[in-house]
Image (tube, rainbow, N blue to C red):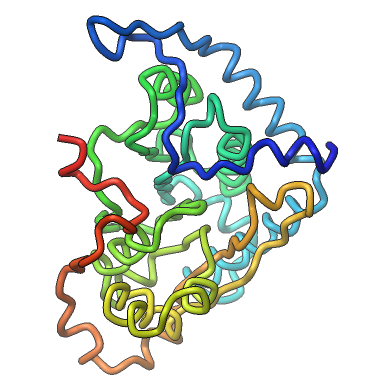
Length: 281
């Protein structure tokens, strides 16, 4: 794949874009039908392409290491696979994968990760408020579970859970950490998404500590491994890390750290980088 082919996919996923749907958006506007089978074939072709990439094998190894470390030390890959049916996966903010090349590659990568961990596709919960009805049909055809409510990242985990949050806004990460701000909660999280250290470096310190206090504190509680990104996929997988919260680190934290955990409030909602529930009503 050439460098130039990837230059056309530089538009950010969060920007407004037109995409096809299998139902009318309104009584006066009818869009072309989305060919579900065609989109599924494109995703599977992309998956096959990624499987042949050298960097994929490094992603796989880092994820297996992070997942086993967060469960217990020196657990073998085979043990992790045998307990895969206990794992859950949540994916937020994937974007319009039927029209965005980067989002399609990110979806294909998610399918590969689920495969190596042997997580059932029905145990992968997916949500993005910009999904078209046709894209939701594609995800269901793949076997995934499409969430119908905008949780804003505020999902309480009750079992070991992988969160796939590619290029999502900081508020989404912050909300997720707040909802699981306990020794038990954080120890069950593994996140594939933007580097927490990268967020800290790119954000004004005062704003980072006030607006995104849970990420600010989590930087010192997690183990973060940067994942490789080839130059021809820089718009797809750049600044991506696998983040886990090993119990041996969490146990060193004073109990007072978990005592007060107020729900995040954001002053500047225009630059929040996520779509809130209220904007959808």
